[in-house]
Image (cartoon, rainbow, N blue to C red; front, side, top):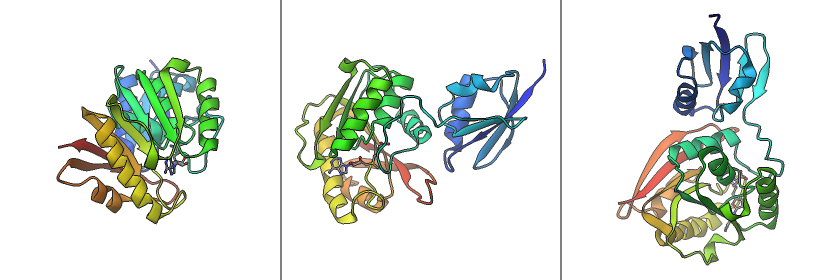
Length: 253
Ligand SMILES: C[S@@+](CC[C@H](N)C(=O)[O-])C[C@H]1O[C@@H](n2cnc3c(N)ncnc32)[C@H](O)[C@@H]1O
């Protein structure tokens, strides 16, 4: 059987997750070369189109130079400022180890790229989405519709996390791309916002629940989720357009 060669491009810092997804979906892929930004592999598949089911890399290229943009999502037509790269949203879902029974909360949902990825690719039970901005809620509605998600599987609230009424302890995972205070918001308002996130997590997260958070405000995050009550672990540092945010997994002690 003839082998074809492909090159995957990735977001710097996400290498181990891209490799994991590739080998889970294509166990016979033979890794030829790997670097921080690229993985080359060969396998029996001859048509590059088959790799459209890889969601964590950003692009794939075949030996003739044909390239697919794997970060593009057909349902992501409405955007917000500082929206997450969908490949990274997929990786946050991998880190959260999502399953079919999970109820996921994204309290800074923007256009709901993370919650829609969780429903479409990880088949979580339900998602709850919150954002202070009307534009974000409007964009989310459009994207949920385009993604063909049943209305019973998502709830959208236009609300400031500092005075949200959410209180039911039914959330398994909080997965979110937080305001960094660089492109969105300011450090001073982030202090209150991050404190409110910690208070909300204490209220709504089930005992065994966890948070997966992408942020540049690393010091603030560790101040708010105190050592006495939480385990805070940095999992990866990613390169996102010159910024170096980290993905944290936060669990109750
Ligand atoms: C970094 S963006 C998230 C983008 C989202 N992951 C996406 O890809 O579309 C942060 C979001 O937090 C929202 N936000 C800022 N302050 C907030 C607050 N106090 N309460 C709730 N949402 C807030 C902003 O409106 C923005 O949509």
